[in-house]
Image 1 (cartoon, helix red, strand yellow):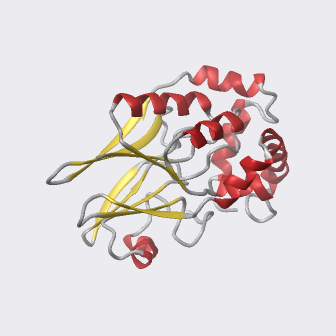
Image 2 (image 1 turned 45 degrees about the horizontal axis):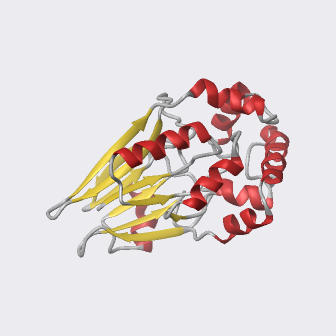
Image 3 (image 1 turned 180 degrees about the vertical axis):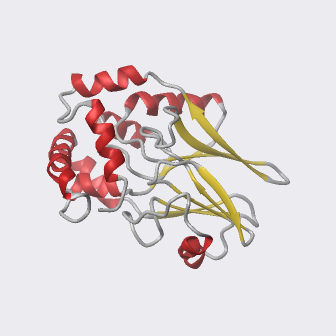
Length: 243
């Protein structure tokens, strides 16, 4: 069994297609997607169509919630609110009613058995929220909500912060996938995880995939996105922090 887990595609078709190609080359047998599929990128519909064509487990992220019901005051810095609302309206108009129903109906967590004794629990941000932030610098105690919601899991995986990392504590391991479409760690390559289960063990690999970043930026202009690529990236860095 090879399980790929990816998150935070954010409408970046160039990055997403490169990851899918890498997944295929690595003979991955199962895929899980931890949300933030369409909103805040040039190709919301195309990315969602690719997801829906896959035989993958998919859960909801905060950006999926936003694209369905809008971005509300208090959820992002006030100086970013009007632009994000314009981006949301633009992206929502690209999706069909069935697409929006699909996003709205996604579950908010998943459990995957890696072996008879080993289980994985995954969510987008935290077990209790699509929006709360647990950073890579958080204390072990801040990850206790993961353990409390599923004590039998050995691995806890989430997305949302766009920063890949892995940490072990109390016999458990908490892992962030990083982001397919908008990595925040200074490495522009798309990030995702592969769990490789053998007869004796489970091996974890962080994958980084190059893609045509220049074309991804051009896509924003060619699609008439409400914000320039440069301003969009700056804005996302700002709204990654709590208001």
